[in-house]
Structure formats: C-alpha cells, structure tokens
Length: 223
Image (cartoon, rainbow, N blue to C red):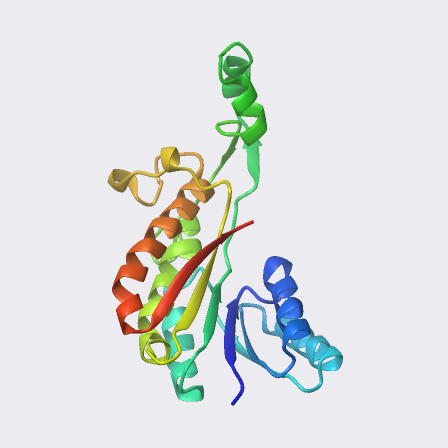
C-alpha cells in the first residue's frame, strides 16, 4: 500500500523542494498537494509525474488564509483517504519586512549590538492585516488554519500500530520574546511572523501530549 503524504504550500519554495526530495527517496508515494492556486498546482503535479512516473500525485485546493477552505479540504480528504501517513504543515506567509531605524540607531550604542546584527531581532518589523474571518492574517495562515486541519483530519491520523507524523515548518526566527498569551495574535506587535512560529512550536508540544497516546507524532523543523 502506498504511503500517503499531504503537503500544504506544495507548489513553490520549501513545499516544492520537499515534494522533489520525498519522491527522490521513494517514488512509490502518493503525494497530495494542498495548494491555493490550482493552475500552478496542476503544472507542478504534471512536472512531478513526468520526473517520477511511478508516483501518484493529486491535488486538493486549500486557501490557507480562509478557515472555511480548510473545512472544505478536510471533508474532501476524508472522502479520498482512509489514513494519512505524514502531513507537512508548511504553508505560511511572512509580510515584507521593514527596517526599524529607531531600533538600529539605539542598538548601535548598546551592549546588544552583536546580538542585534547576528539575529536581526528588533531590526526588521512587519505589518499585518485583518482577514475576512476577522483574524490577523499571519496567525490565520500560519497557525489557526493548520490547527483546524489537524483536528478535522484526526480520524485519518491516529493509528497506534504505525503512528502518523505531522511536521510543522518552524523558523529560527521564532522567539519567545515576541509571543504573549495576552496578545496571542500579535495584533499589537511588529513581528507577527516570529510570534506565529513560536506559537506553532508551543502548539506542537501541546498536540504531542494529546495525540501521541492515540498514534500521531508532531515535529517542528526550522528553516
């Protein structure tokens, strides 16, 4: 039986590189590409099948900035598959960063100047916006949508005989200092990407505690 692997954000960047790497290691996989842009996904699907003709590659449409899209995709996936062996929770956004001039000038004369330039902490800030769901776009895209996907697909994940793996794309930019439960969507801050990635790290730990006894393992991978 083919192993079934679902990858969100599979049509470009890390997601596409991951598809190629997985098929290079096992071209008997069934890859399911979860993508927003269907025409782009279809082109990627055709290219993957051309280079790995023994693989099976399918597509499910998911707009990661729309919660209802996750519900629709989850319903479709439960109709298609009896189980999912791996899910790569990869899709996400990082708003275009802007240089924080004030932090730069202050940092030049502080003891943290080396740390500041080696990590860019506080130097690069990002804007955010509210989605149609009334949520901060970065957190809806990077955190909430994937959480819904996990909970909706729970019947396909929990198999104690051969645990499913869920791999979350995190980041070295994830910092505790940028996350607060009092402002868990980072609506008042200027580094939503860092905050969202720290939130996924915390969420992965919590989900492991809940799902491991039932047969699913969560892992975070930094890029």
